[in-house]
Image (cartoon, rainbow, N blue to C red; front, side, top):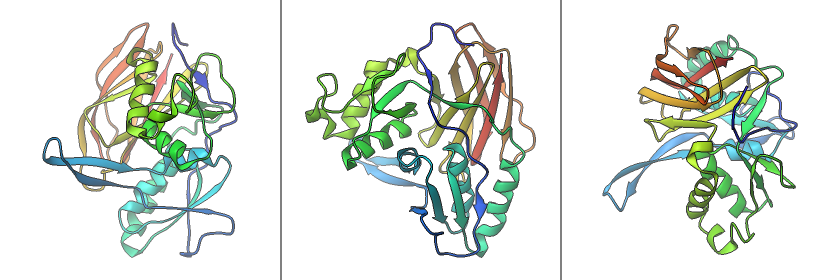
Length: 282
């Protein structure tokens, strides 16, 4: 399926079911309550403009495999929460208010129409040794925000960039600044080896699942309740010959400028509100 490619099917991770709607604002016993995902626009001192900061729970979900999660998400953020849980394969329950009931129900109905991804596992470039500290968690958070695909490991894995904070390659002095560390990890990986690249948005987070003949590209616009993204360009390493897309809240979408080469598939998604899934086939 892939030529000259550094990747791994992340072990032990299988796509979860569609999230459930909760009738109570109280988390189920043993569930981890997650903050509401969103985008905050912060003042960028260097440019004197607002810079988007994606508040994603992806790293919390990946850090707690097999856990049950709970969102109490008002209004349109309920639909975003459902899409986030689906993208990161979380077993989740979502409670919302009256304003969120219709968008949440619509999102869950949409997610149920998508290919299940049964038998597929996440495709990743990076093996990160997570020591359980806040420092390591923030590095995971930055990797997710920059669409650098990783899995948590306890030993080096063949074909993956091995990242152990405090090693000679990734020294502790730099790990104190997660932004610098994420940049160093990207530099060591090399953009030409990245399985998934997203152009045209700072608020879209992608994930990639696959098996021997298919790949599923998950695209989540964390600002989708307020702003649609237009003209989103995607590049996926691997040899494919077919592509089709589903976008929440929109009629069937035709991908634009689709290009297949022996190295990668590239295409443009004309519009993305909250969530999209693109299926690639050999």
